[in-house]
Length: 324
Image 1 (cartoon, rainbow, N blue to C red):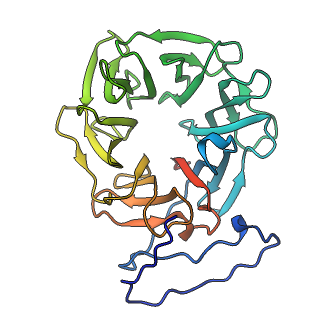
Image 2 (cartoon, rainbow, N blue to C red):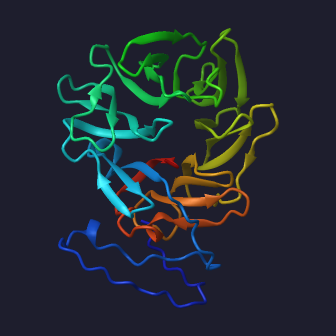
């Protein structure tokens, strides 16, 4: 997919040849196509975690870590006893990640925690639960983890002790994310008598909810908090598009980097004007590729501009960035 020839470029593409020991398609990347306006990609010094799979039902997902400062890309899950690990999230200090995966001991979706730079297996935080445990996210202070268990939102400490269950009116609640002050949770909740979802804010102190983004028969999902004022989310209407939402109730806006006819999703903030996201836009290597995008100008940069092996013929999704 995404192999349509780009005929409108008026400049020559510099093809850089890389020599490597393996002849697989993963290690022989296609030439990187720079932005049409030749704007250099942003300089980043943090790190990124993401997952890659050939197809969702193939159960072959792997979690990767990429360090922008050292240009080192690592397959974190290479020797883990976990099937299909995905959707990792950094702790506030950048030293740990939480993620979901299928435990090989009980063949169930569980939540795991892992300390970066160690050789020990990740710890299964939900090994004694019944059912599916998914979508984990650290609290702003790093002491708690919110996650989804069988469609219900729960909170635990970093050793797996359940602290509380958040009772909401939705039949299904998923993809929870703490607000920046840690006092509320933003999540995707099912609409009444409908399979689509809205973005909802839940107050931890009093249990009240606030509808943040809702469109009839349209999915709004994957909320990620930027700051006390704004959050990102994906909206599906023909194709997935990334929107900027406001906690004060102002109308959400479609961000300028979106393109019709292509999916843009899984957006995560990098700095005040740049986000990490996945897209099926023309010119990528696989179905979904990772990009950086400017939420003001709309400019986009393939992550292969940083390292030619990040995007592959597979699907690269669930990118999360830490400046530390």
